[in-house]
Every structure is written in structure tokens, then in C-alpha cells.
Length: 234
Length: 292
Figure 1 (cartoon, rainbow over the protein chains, first blue to last red):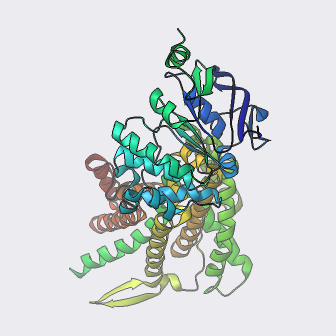
Figure 2: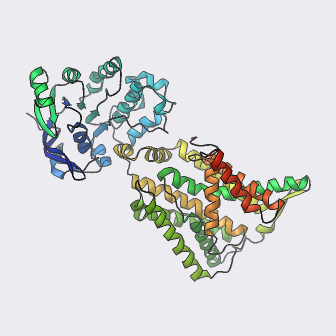
Figure 3: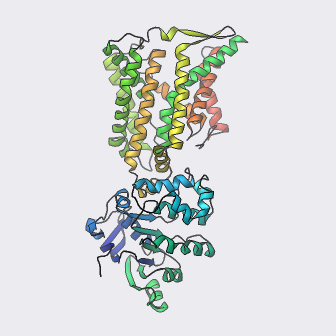
């Protein structure tokens, strides 16, 4: 097996004195789609934020392409090729759709993604390019958030709860674009509340509970019982 | 009738100067929600800086203030950048008090240093007679050449700032960090650098405003707080987030003061405050809030 693109070893994370992650071991290989599931408060978002540099971590607890990046500023991490689609989308309200997308290109990485290819992926955004980012429907806003992350031409795309607050049909529409997104060999981590969606779209799956990994394995091979036990800890 | 028209015209021109005072404040507040209570004192500091530079250059008075302003611009930008990067960034947070206290302290320091160096005597930058020159605009009206020039500079600056804020990559970065600092960090923006650039540009505006103010009238070390008040009132009347709004706010303030002065020489400043208070009462978000 080749070296993983991203690996964490004993990753711990804190909000002040409160410890949210207790030694998370995680890895993802180039081209994989890995899902992280878990109940509310299990530490999924914390894990993603720590990897993306929004929370502090020990330098060698997060390895990306063989280099220690734990706790680097978020801006430095995106420049290395890790892009986070944050929970709740976090579009810039005073920027138009197009300007929001352009913000993603700030890291100045080259690759297949630019305004044109993002508009190709989400044609509706081209129509609404002059609208304020927050004047769109929830699903369209999520497309902007994903497009904005892609604009940095990442090697690793991290999606935090992109189905949150969206109608099932819209969720399906967004996940249907995943193959096109990954066709260039992009590696993806998704956090998902809906376990069946997570199982369907991913190669492998991690389950977190109270800041620890309680289950991991091939998405197809894991049984419903195993997952629900790891999920609820009963 | 002509007298009233004259009052309005003079007020509009005065408003141009207020707009110049206010634009730097508007930028700093708009980008980082920082209330710079030393803003007026920085304008006065810039005026004295230009005064000393113009003297030191030893050029003919018709050219000296303009060259001094040109020299002052990069110095002011660098000072603003450094002040934000190494002092004010450390005061920003959920609590607005630290930045208020620090800038208030700066105001006191600046006033006292200026008193020490220049004494309390009012001074003016010699513009070689430009400050008393005037042009006929017909109908028996004449306006001062320098006020007209200042107004022109204010218009150019308002358009330039609105363009910078609304149409350029730097302006996009300003709006993004103002909207959501964490999300902007995720895009690879270093907010400390972006903030410092904003203050640098604001200080360049301060340098322009200070030099022109020093040419137009006399300045003394304790003038700052009054200018801060005018700048504030213009920003609030115009509404946050729009430089055209700030410009309009400055002009409204200028016209109101001119009308007040016309009615009674003691009423000018007071009339401006009344309009400002009325604005806070009836339209607290200002005339043109959050337009891009």
C-alpha cells in the first residue's frame, strides 16, 4: 500500500480546557472517498476543523503528503492543497456568487478548477453569478461553498455536513456531482449524518463517538448492526 | 436668495473636507469593526507632519504643500500598516473595549507630543495664497479655489474607494474578512495582513485630509477630537459600508453646519449635531447602509 495522502496519529483537540478529540487515528489514500459518521457532538466537525487548521494540534499529529502540518494556520494548509467546505456553508454575505467563488482561488494553486469549470459543474451558479451569495436557495448556496473550495484546486476536499438542512432530492443532486468532482483523482473526506448516504458514496468509513474512533472499515463490508453499535455505543 | 445659495454652496464644499475626514474612519470601521478614537488626532498629526515637511523642503509655497503630501503618503501608509499589524490587531476581539482604550490612549499621546513639539499656537501650511484665491461661478457667487479643489479630491477619493472596495481583489478580501474572518482564513487569507492593509490605506487618506485641512485653515494640537466627531457623524449619517454614503454624510453635515452658522454664528456645529442625533433617532442605519 502506498503512503496515505493524509494521516492523523493520536490526534487530540481542545476547546479551551474541554477535550473534544482523544487520540484519533485516521488515514486516507490518494483518490479515496472516506466518510466520517457519528452522533452530534461525536467530534466529526472538530476533527475536520483541526485538520484544516482552524483548531490547534500537535505538529506531527497531522501528516499530509508525508509532511507534518498539524496546527499550521488555515491559510498555509489550504495552500498545500487541503480545502474545507465548512459546516453551515459560511458564504460571504456581501460578496456575489462569482466573488465568493473567486475567494476560493485566493490560495493561487493551479489545476483543473476555475470559474468556467465550476460553472460547468453547477450551471445554475452561472445564471446567478451576480446575485449575493446568500440570496440563493440552500442547495445552491451549498454548491457555491463546494465550488469555492474546488477553486483552490485542492488535493484533498473536506466536506462538513453538506446535506444539513437540505431536502433529500437536493442532497442527491449534490452527491450526484461527486463522481465528476473526483474524476481528476481528487481525494474526499465527507462528514454525513445520514449513514446510508455515507455508506453509498464512500469507499471507507470511520465512526466517531465522544472523540474516539469506534469503528472503521470498508463501507460495503460493514453491517448495519456494527455501525449502529459504534454510532450509539450501546 | 443669493445669500442662501451661497450658504449651501459653501456648505457642500465644507462637506467635501468632512467626507475626506470620514472615509478613513469608514474604511477602518467597515473592515474590522474597529472604532479608532484617535482618528481626528491622526489627521492633526498629518497636518503638522505636512507643515514641517513643507518647511523643511524649502520649496516655493505654491508647490511645497503638494510635494509634502506626496512624501507623507507612503510614510502614512507604512505607519498605518505597522500600527495595525503590531498594536491594534492585538486589541481586536469580541470585546470592543481594548481597541477603544488603546486608540483613546494614542489620542492623548499624540495631542501631548504635538503640544510639546509645536506648542499650543495654531499654525497653517503656507499654500502660497491658494487659500485666499477664489473663482467666480456666476450669479454674483464666488467660491474659494482651495475648497473647490478639496471637494474635487473628496469626490475622486470616494469614487476610488468605492471602486477599490467593490471591484478589486483587495476589496473582495476586505469584504470577506469583514463578513467572516474564519471562513476567510480557510481561503488562505491572513486577516492580520488584510487588516493592516486597510489601516494603511485609511492612513493614506488621513494624510491627504490632514494636509488639505492644514492648508485650508489653522490647526492646533488639541483640534483632533472635534474632527473625530465630524468624521463619525458623517459615517453614521451616510450609513456603514458605503463610501458614497460616507461622502453624502459629509456633505449633509457640511451643509447643515453652514446653514446653522448663517442663522446664528453660535449654531453651526450645534446644527450638525442635531441632524446627526435626528438621524440616530429616525434612521439609525444611515442613508445608504451596506450598498456595495
